[in-house]
Length: 259
Length: 191
Image 1 (cartoon, each protein chain N blue to C red):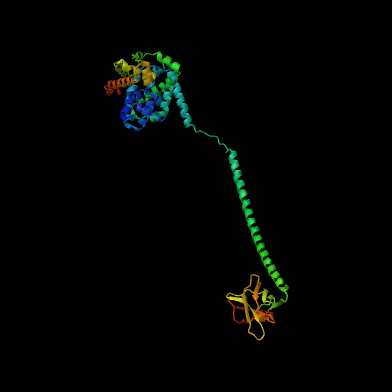
Image 2: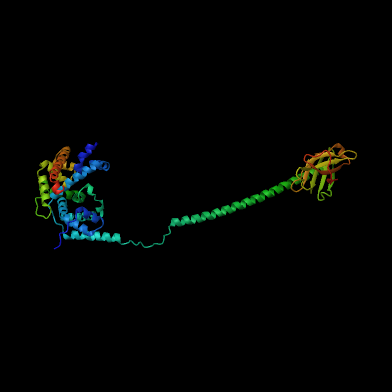
């Protein structure tokens, strides 16, 4: 519909005579068109004049009284401060449930946290226990190996004692007829940085024969396997010295252990 | 002797009413009660209904005086438009049976009152009455049926047995002639 079409509808609109569809369409147009709104104002003035053709009539006095009474009532209502009685906040069931839920969640969280800490501690304790068991197992395995070696025909067991520099040290050396040897040492101090221990086989009239180098564990214990030279199988002296990292060609005094 | 107090304009009264001046509303009511009540009786043909709607109209004026915009028209137009709108709404809300009875009780030719024995601006009434009387009947009838009976163009077409397009054309032509007649007197009568 064009602007001109709407303009033609305006006089009828001023008389409220438009049918519903036209009325709605024009109302929408009026909301956007200043010119048509101005035109409607003019037509409404003309239409209002028609009211004068109705016979004047005097309403009863009670109408005036009712109007004034009503507006006084409305004015008083707007002036009188509306005092709303204070009501204590009513506890909402769901809010209460919400608070309880929050408390329950917090308690649960603390419990779970405590349980996790406990589990962690237990886990650590079990790890430590397992480590201990593994170490014990290793020691038992070594002892077992040692016993197995000693059970072989012709095997020998020798003891090495700590010298003045390592009085608490002690070692047992077992070897079979093939020269396979096993040494279990304890009480040796941890070697300083850049140093490690070295096993020696000492036979009369021969220079000391070098064996394997080794370090100690945290408890000062060592389990070492080595292959003895054939000459060492008879009447050899076994000794342990402290040497530079990688070992030496000849032992550096003093000895820490000797048989 | 007291000097005659200058009458407060309708615009000033509405401004005072917007400020919740009860006296201003009473003054406005006294100025327009007869015109508006006559209009409402003409529409509703019942004093009781008309008084009820008149009360509604002035309560609305009390509540909405701040909405009045002088640039969009005169207070008279605003009041009449408000009253007629309320009156037509009430008429349309009445039962269809009652409405038919009310409409049937009146003939368009009887709608123009020649009563001039009132304290209102009878000259203005005469002017409008004459302007309306000069309209051809086929233009006047649709206008009267729409204005006082609240009929739509389709309802008027059905009532008069005329094509809808014809009714639209005649209604528009009638109102245009009325505007022309009144505009010639606008300087003296404020239309």
